[in-house]
Length: 251
Image (cartoon, rainbow, N blue to C red; front, side):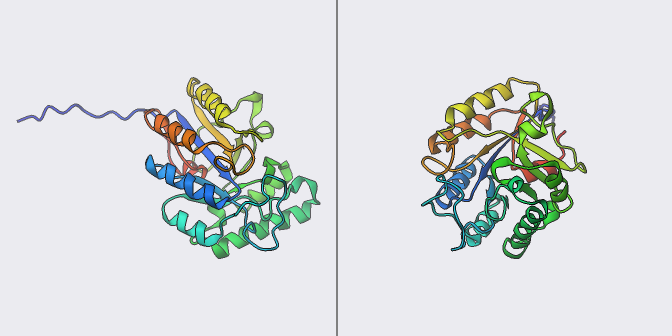
């Protein structure tokens, strides 16, 4: 006897959104992970390699007096399924130092991750430039060590578009992102996501930082929760960390 089930035809995934959170603020990153988990999602968390060390010097007022997590925290969150990637050695602007010193900074960061983050392999990583500041020379060098780099979209994406192309396996990743600050970014995120979802498709990477009162251009916890609650209902959309998006084959 036939069960009368209709054949299932998967909806084509035409849009990818990555909410790429930087800096490793301990309170915010645990909350970001929790909110993503509540919606069955994995968070994209990018941390400063030396941010937890006593010698770390905050690069600006948006880092001062804030507690950053350490690699015990990052291993725990990674163990819960979230993606943890490098966001520089000490949040220096590499474009403002001699090229060889900047290269050493990248290598020092990756070496620390390999020694302290379980299972981390540089060749599979996304290196997230501090201040979204890079040069083609720095990007080329980093791409000899990592799977992809993330920097300012205004330098990477042509024709003033804000979305990256849907990723294809095997291609090196120059990922352009967009950010907003220093004030609360809720309204900006809403506008960017709405514009993107009304477009034909691609991969939108929004660079965010902390939640509520932490960091430059924070989003509110309540807004992030509501946004993800709405986004998971879109059949043609995937919400993915950057590294996972690069690994997936989008049909």
